[in-house]
Length: 250
Ligand code: 13P
Image: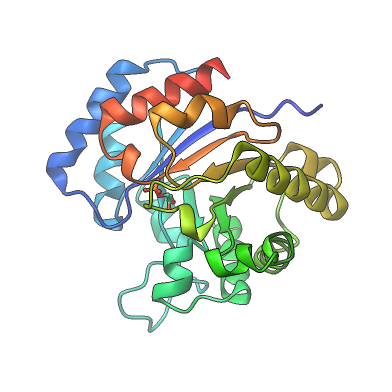
């Protein structure tokens, strides 16, 4: 049984300006020494300021995307190294909203994840099926293909976290049953172990999609769920704090 430190990760998506940094102060005050890792991924404009605000506190800061290249003519994009320079320690790659809005493929996600590793960042690599795919009985096949395609060979327990986020559960208030979450997480664990051996055993697997303080405890009790990637309920310290507390007790 691997000793995986739990992780509560928040993805602010395209939300938040400087005024929202007060939420970080509130979170740090509520959890000065959390019994789990805590990560917030604000929009790129806030990464540096949030990292400054969190300095010395038990809160890591991450980007929401990075480019696969280290520099160059890519207007509007951000290199992994730039996120690290701004104070980020993590970056989300392959979020379904990037896959949908920007046509990101597994191959692109794998290159971005590789770039994150090369820059010394921990990648939070997202995968998950759509409702159509679930209803067609393709969930495990889709997740396996995305997992294989999105992770570079450099992935290890130290530099990679995998987030299972069923697309149909994101921002909808719909959550898979605990059995469904358990089925996918158990399957992903086996896939990771097949490819990465002990690193696959130690790699953290997050669940994401409509996690709230009210449903967090039951989700965290599912085997192979090592934490959550939280969207809407990570925006307010009071909401995210409830999820962190549930994870500390899990
Ligand atoms: P919600 O928690 O708002 O459903 O979003 C989940 C998500 O996409 C996190 O990356």
